[in-house]
Length: 320
Image (cartoon, rainbow, N blue to C red):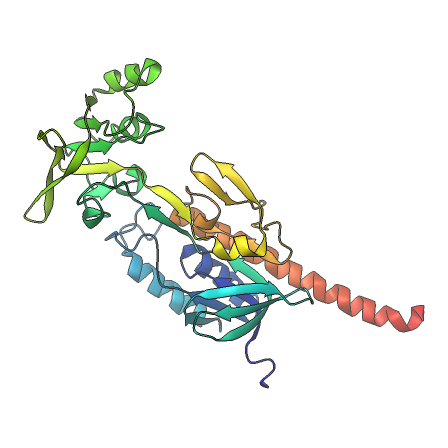
């Protein structure tokens, strides 16, 4: 391979989580020269285990990623650490990429799977317990903490929702209103029916003893004994690359996310996106599925583009 083609790829996948590795696996099996650029900042890193992924239930996130990397390497897919600082159209249907370390790449197609960041409420001690006994998703962690004393830090816009959801995993649920308004109407009736205790007042911090959560401390000095606290973080997509390329967004109750079609195509020709970069509810198994779909569509796009070029080149002499 000469110097002009050494850093040229058919597809560059930006992000090496479930969506990115799944896309890379499909592309490697399709014999596409593919590179995965991974910043090494997975959303689920604080969690000890992943749940709800058929055949991988209970596996550690680190082991999951290691297995995925081994699989894509078996098909010749390259992986490099780092971040893509910029991507600009090259005028020939592809993209010129610059990595943060100065490396320059070219790609005919891009799949962006950069995920999101969870911004936690500003409550003392919350971040230190994140992924341990401060949790977000009952489908991810509810079984493991079932029947314990749950606390729920109310979301300002949906104060009752999470408390109602987690009541399926415990009969002992306390909703801390914190800065949220008191639920009324149907929400209040449902909370009462579920047996959820509602506590007014701002939460000041957590009580931790012997490296485990034992209570929630309110600003007025009260302490409520709890073993688990659920909270709804603000999901912030890592979409800087997509935004710089001019990708259209869609509004969700949790903010703006990159708009994609059913295959992951964005509004930018040659750019696909998958996983949590496109929405806050893409669980691990869904992200892997979305990466698979995007890769299959990218491969078809490259295939037919190549055939069309060959057909046009073959027809040119006759037309002339």
